[in-house]
Image 1 (cartoon, rainbow, N blue to C red):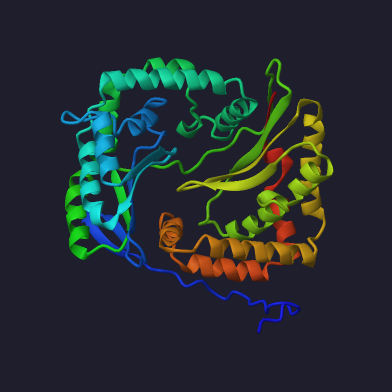
Image 2 (tube, one colour):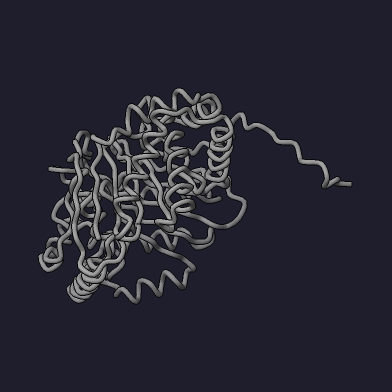
Length: 418
């Protein structure tokens, strides 16, 4: 019988048992990745295209992505979605600076029919003028609403200055939506979707014949398109303030260009960042939310891209305490740069970090995400083993060194909007 007066034994995680996907060549080095160790009938398929917002004119990538299921010469948008629903499928599409992903969910018995429907919709998308006009109107109205929010203003100003003088620093203006044409969307689609497939990821208990048939369907979407990612940029250092009449809040964004997980210091920096602002019990939260009561939430992180990354701090505070909040952020940086983290705090962060790794690796769908989290950067699963080892062994001195090396205030882009 279980004695609840006795604390359960705590085991130390030594390693995570990863599932390795099977890889199938499609064409020109592009591959399909497949994990078939799924206990139920659920299937998830991701199609990744070189169709990010860094390419072409502002907003064009977003429009092409949003209208992929807007109709073909054979079916209207309503008819496409009715067929999708009838087969029990769910479709989702999104864009980033560096790519676009189309995701399909369904059950095993209907997945090939769903996949065929999706490929037909993408391959034959004709972007009806009526749908384009409706989306232009929706985007314009949404832009007007968002422009009243200090978080939106700060995010745009931050992007422009962190990625200064590069395509990644381009932000969409209201007038850009009126410049979007059906012809421009069709040209973007032809270049970046019909010839821009970068990878296919399948998670589901399927048979190899179905996988082969899927490869045959997507092979025409692989072209000779060269993918160029931003490799070097320098953020504009200094403080930038934008007033917003009537605002009672001030949005704060602070950051700088750094690196991604291929860098030697990435893992050490990530542990330091967790202590600083990377989880609910972080120093930024403890000080600025819990102690000072300036905000409901504040955090920091390292956003990664294919060739680089950027560090950021983000919060919204009362307009009357914005400068005080800035001083407290500086204070927490200085503490990390001058004082050694206690073993008690470091132990808590170690346990939290490893726990989050376990949570993020639970199940086949999460396992595919873990695989892509290293494969996209030319790494393998050894990265996660190295991370566990470093989290266990990192010292307070190494954490202090990371703060001194990378959190220099004079290197930061500081944005306040409100």
